[in-house]
Length: 340
Image (cartoon, rainbow, N blue to C red):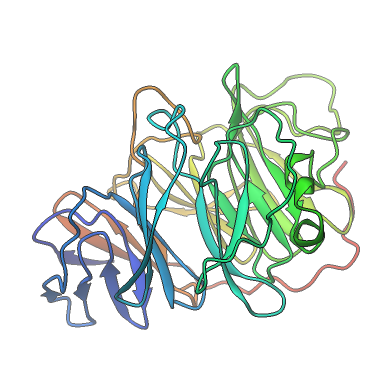
């Protein structure tokens, strides 16, 4: 593990080649020599998180529990973004960047209402989902597009409060935007019996979902229960892996057939078994579950290098760069078996 010194705690991290960049911090940069290069610009607003497009061209800096955000093309401001003020102080700002199948880079967010997803062309600002809508009462959050741009994941919540996950077909939604207001492509049976803490795409077909709560004893059911890590396959239409875990998983970052779990400290988990492959107890991260909470525990700041070999994790006075164990990239699964 390499430890980089910082002048102030990084509030965002992204890889640019072998450099680490803090976009919230005005573009502060750490090269392979570990020396911090100062910010090239200063934001006039207290943003505290960021998201970067897969291409690296576009980025959004935002306030995790606020209503304001900025979209950048490189270091050039494109436009200001907003979200509804309703309950904005108790759940994470819903925003992500990605590319559609035709290559267009898009922004997905909820600019008008907490429960209405909109897709817009990142460059022009054109709304691609303009039309009649009939939204249900769900707070969208922790958005993520699948690597191939075919589907959208939302790991938000509904009133109880209770964390949920939904997946939408983007190709169909561009033709009929009202599909973003429906149930999505995940069926209710077999579904999820536990409260969703987090979710992420493993590839274009599979998503990993973590739930909170005490694992169930006794008879197994086809649903993903509390205290479990599951892998759902779109092509198989079911859970292909389900594992009980005896620890909180927290935020997920995909890495082949493993996921990085960020809760208390980083862990590397095999998604097929739920086993911890490696962990780093000396690297502390916030104990954060889910997308909501009246008491705001910030989402951990971490970035996985695109080649999957290194994980950068923000610390109060440093950045820890962890060398991860070797892995194989997950292959395409056409008809994976359903988990018993």
